[in-house]
Length: 196
Image (cartoon, one colour):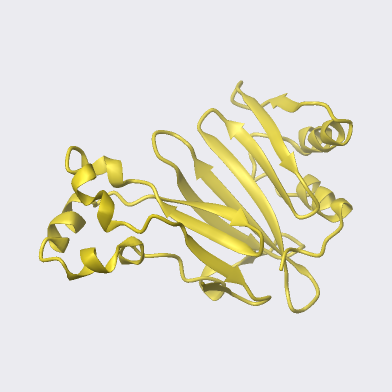
């Protein structure tokens, strides 16, 4: 169930977003992004660090901004049972391997504790049964101390992918089959994200 907000709703929420959530762009620049997208023009601006930020997508319930060479922000609206929107912000560092962090807000941009909304995937959730039964599992866990995951908004929910397997080094290929090939899918039910 995607957010039931109109295009105007996500636009006003984005424009009125607190600067602390997207510190590289001012409110005026966010307004310009919306105007450019509505005009069919490329929405880009020089950010506060002197680099370029670009709005890549804008729909009735989601938008994506490449904030810098190594970062992006997704804003997604999910319909809550109380008739209002849940705002999900996904900040992703896109350096060597993607690493995402989620935060949630109500329509007044008051933070909502993510623990009340979703139980984020743990390392073991990405592993196959073969891996979980292996005597070598402890070796893999020691080699995988750096654990990154990326989050993507999909129709009706979120998907998570494990992204730091290659940090293991030369043994990465040895363990690749131990990880589930498909992303972990969570469906929004109007109150919580539940593992599919």
